[in-house]
Image (cartoon, rainbow, N blue to C red; front, side):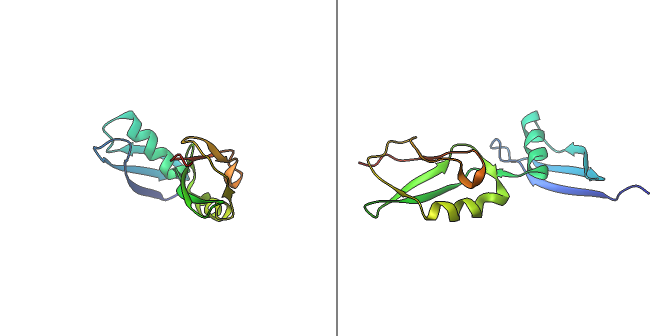
Length: 121
């Protein structure tokens, strides 16, 4: 007996078009992607259905008590976002900091660095 078809809908965020993309799945395998107006949309939908990834933006505390805005240098698996936030909640950074400077490495065991999104003197 064949597995039941499943259909998931995603809104593409790759470009301003915001295509509504349908992904048809059978037996755990993607069998069809429709509704995208470009290849990048199909790639995004495939990734979103199989392993959603997100860039984490948050803050870490500076030693002087101020907050420094930071983000992951690359997207990390969506299911690790809360773990990454918990990990970063205990981080204390000493200034000065330059924009783009790595302030934490290998967040949540992903191999992805966390970088400053603002300079601080």
